[in-house]
Length: 477
Image (tube, rainbow, N blue to C red):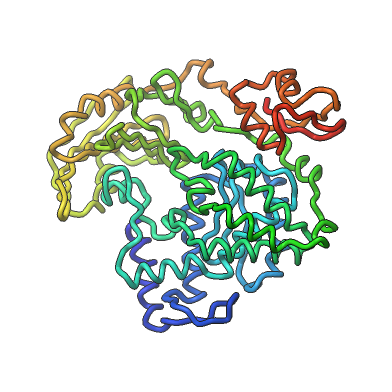
């Protein structure tokens, strides 16, 4: 990851020598740009690979083709039709959509479950295309490079943990850059323009914004930020978009029922097959392992790693897995060799619940900060090697060491069918009878009461409203 970052930065600095100003494709004005279009596309490709590995792509070829198809209706109508656009779905319930330089655009299954029409999807994709076409991320990166601020997003501890956790990629950190008010207004205007050019009613963007306001930023403590985290939404934006609409927009396509039919059966909420926490333990049904989670520690689970952070954020614990036939000491040497300035303290071999393991302890000096202490534990289970990284400052490490060791020593094979056979909830569609209100409809379909407010918003209805007979309503089963 570090070498990848260095290659990207080297490319950026080379480009900076040749390109200090460029004409913005949308405004026609010259502006600061230390990244050429070629460099932008290269950065996008690198980032796309990191995003797929980190967050995971939703496995539904038909739905992916549908989303990509809507996006590709818009792409030729933008200011930069020559870019190699792609539109993909991330396998996460977080409500978000974002773009990275070069034309790579993502929506989450969480945001797809929230929307109610193809026109809404077109508006969201158009908004993200606006960010790409106006080169908002590229301009912000250029400003930050020029000011030598750097792009570190700030991990639970510091840059060293960011490196160990695989979040030191320059590209990935684009996801954590908030757009300015001017950038958002411009992306909104371009989203309206591109939607209209593709014959979609751009007015559905206003309804989408209202739903977001009601739902709030539901990203919680997840590693992927939510839509409102990276796209601040002010009432002014809704007013501005409303002013851009015209009566003729009402004659353009909405395609509500067509869209809902496409998202029928989409996974709703967390997918337990990818791992979940219950009663003080983390269970992974697919990889068949479990381990203890200390009380009040936050857990972030992505396809590439599980991260635990203490309540006071003074300690962190990371789990990654990889197929390997190497011996544990050889594998350990390769995993730790890139850590700059590391000082070896000790190593140990143990059998943990019938599994072979190898452990190493290091001190890692930090510039202008406390020295870190890290314990790496490597456990072989079948064809996989599981790497545990326990990290805190040298002065705090001893206070967490019992918890670190309890986590590692609790790692074991998962064989209990009660935890293995968990299935995710899915979005389903029912038709209203015109007599019952939304709350009664949810109750009749066995929807958990705590989901009612969120599902009502995602149906653009109040719980007390009676949907018209034949209206398609989203429920969860």
